[in-house]
Image (tube, rainbow, N blue to C red; front, side, top):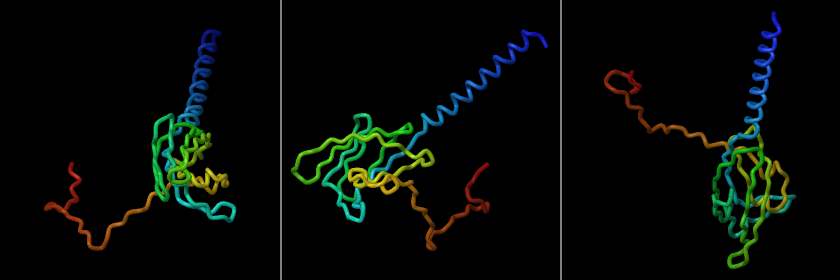
Length: 157
């Protein structure tokens, strides 16, 4: 093997290693999350905490949720740490408080539920962050499955 060929192979190996490193970096940085904001009352340190009158959630300056007690909102975030701005009105007619959070997001969840009451009242991370699990839908016994004349379910060729 000549010196020219070995340099050429070395350059190819370096390029492949750089591309692999970029892929792993993008998996970490570019991870997308659907954030579900929950404003339900919750128990924090043995004490039941009620939801404030209204919580507005802003992501990158854009309002994504306007929640009252028991409401749920949604937003999209790409990256390992969500930067949230909350505008909290504790009671009707009382002034608003603006609070900013840099919240690390679990990499293993696509849908993340954030209980804002727990976040605002310094609950443990595992108490106010959870995975969003959609409810399973089932067919009722009264529903009919219609089969066409050919005995097929309509999945054409």
